[in-house]
Image (cartoon, rainbow, N blue to C red; front, side):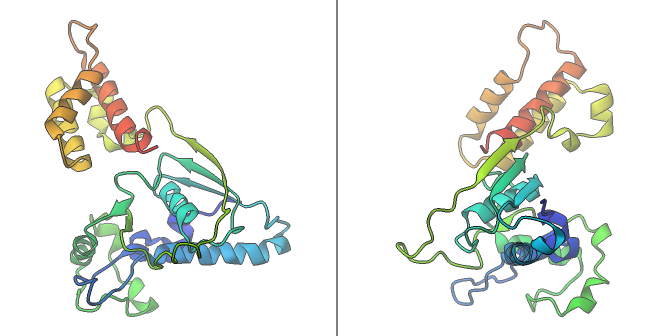
Length: 254
């Protein structure tokens, strides 16, 4: 059975609402923000108790997710809050808990960005009720704080009290052009020259790494350049850039 963790479980599709944190002083006012994971765990408990009525097997539950959905499943696999037996297999497509976008470190900044994009006050970091959800201009906002926050809603129990023995069958995969959607229609149709490729790779390195950026950029550029060609065709340059972005964002985290 598939659980659409990035659409059907987290707050009726408002996936970022399950991971907001507007608390700027976590040490003095600890408020955890990974409620989206708790929603998913609640759904898994429902499946465990009710799927036999639909002809399903509660001891044979498989979760499948793509990108953010895959990262959610990976977090569930590692979370001490997830009881053994809620699911047994996982199919992770183009995402994991190690993906650069899967974990938000600056949680307050991300929360402020979402609140600003939705024209909401940050004085109260809780939603006022279901009646507010209908007026949020979700389709017009460009705020996109991917990822779970770095302060999970349930702190891990002390060593020695953690449940052990949680084992999952796992299948991991991605396509060769997984990050095709990161490029514009014009890029995909006509390709681009090396100067645009260099700009894309600079942005990729700046957003993905904190140290030794120049060395990393030089290495990536060297690796994803076809040195056997005396002249670089725009289509070939585009394809190599897509491969670089795909490998960095989707393949390397594994």
